[in-house]
Amino acid sequence: MSKVSEIKGRWIVGSLSVLLMLPVVFIIGLVVGINIEDAISLSQDTMSSWVSAFATVTIAVLTIVLAKETWALRLIQLSQIEQIRKDTIKPSVNLFLKSSPAAFNFINLHVVNNGPGTAQNIRFRFINASPDTKDVFDYLLTELTKLVIMKKGISSLSSGEHRTSYVFSFIDLHKKFGEKALECITEVDITFEDTEGTKYQTRSFFNFAEYKGITELGGGDPLYKISSQLEKIQKEVGHFASGFKKLKTDVYTSADREKEREELERQWAEQQRIDNESS
Image (cartoon, rainbow, N blue to C red; front, side, top):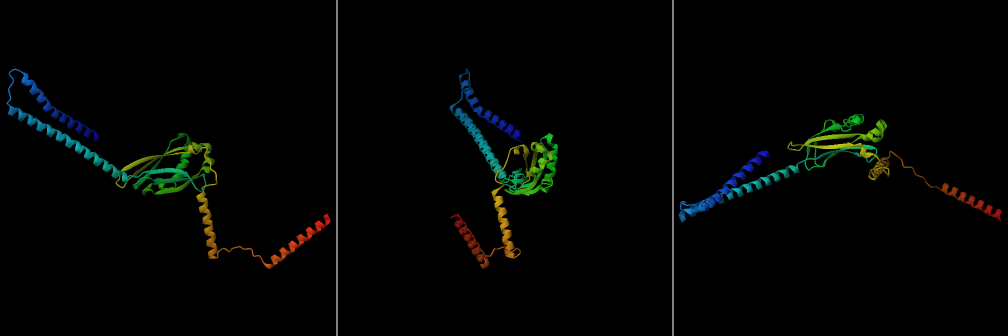
């Protein structure tokens, strides 16, 4: 379609150029003709009529050129408006792996729509990008396709919506395949549509080599630890309120005070004895 438009544009420009050259050619021919012997003499009225006629033609041609340029600008504006409209409904689906807040070696899968529009009919296709690690890829594909959203896709994912799930543990992966597990590279082709049915495609990569040398200090995500502790406190408070769990208390009675007094007196007498023996 763009090539046809380009050809038409060139044809129009060429035609307009020829029309613009006609008055110039006429004037040049007129000047040359005057100097030729036995040239036909033109009256002043006839000359004025011809000049007016060609001036009118020139103005008409320039008007056509101006109209063409105005229409071209209008088409550009319409195209820009249409592109802005499409951008407002264009989704952008991304797929990536990330360590779980619970522990660094637990890997979660994340699917997120970062675009302003809703994504529909999302499908995932996994491709082994490292032939030497086919066994690792097969194991990973088995774990991934346990999730329905990876096997059959997602029907709809609104703007900013996020899906996540635990997939595997790096400890288990390393036990199965050793250092070979960190050489696996998986390509993921993601296809999806916007609300008007326009199709899009993006691509993600799982490169386990990026995890080499990465360590963690501090025992996990502090926010996750705080939420876990708050959950435990909530459970304890709920047990106390329901009477399901009794609170253990230590009561300080008069018998305890008497035992404490006797123990102090004994210690005092022992200290006095030691002092007397020393003197």
